[in-house]
Length: 76
Ligand SMILES: [Zn+2]
Image (cartoon, rainbow, N blue to C red; front, top):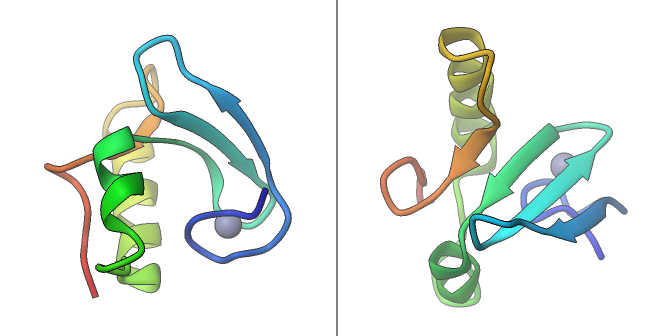
């Protein structure tokens, strides 16, 4: 599959918490929720601001994976 943010080739696996874990060499590792994945076709993410937010999440909470969910999603 391709990364939901930058659209380059990325690895993906199912998450035990629901949603998908994406490992992208550009965007890093993040968890994206099923709800957000369903919204993507009609509502694209703001790529640069979303990447900044993932970066901020990693800095403020190094123990859990950066997440794109209904609360953290930055829409274009
Ligand atoms: Zn990416």
